[in-house]
Length: 160
Image 1: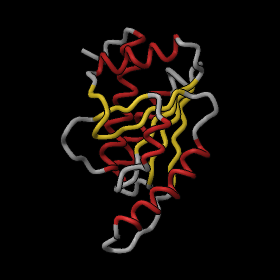
Image 2: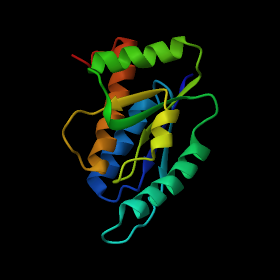
Image 3: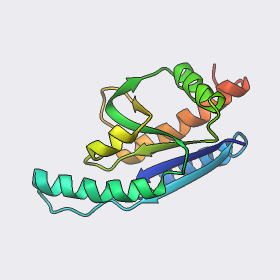
């Protein structure tokens, strides 16, 4: 069975987000071995300088790199990434599975994004579109799209 890891910077706190995340995680278990890793965001001052932000992102990058499963296809969610339809995302994930990879790892960065070297290390950069979303909502959207991609690949009626 294929392994999927979702690395998220920060923790969910609101019950409605926790409930939604738990539901999609439960659904995903029918298609893959799913792992969710919540990593702590680096604490910055109230009005951080660009240098402080860069330093915080560098610390986060080191932690992120230590958590990416060995040999996994690595995809980051970033505004400058490629926008795909749900079908296109499902096809991309299908192609990863057919390439011989046994796992995929997705990353949702912190509120300041992610260090440039994290983006460079990625096998794929994916955009959720030009709109801005709260990171907690983005996590639910990503979980739903991973679930939808798996359902599409399985021929489920979930995706209409």
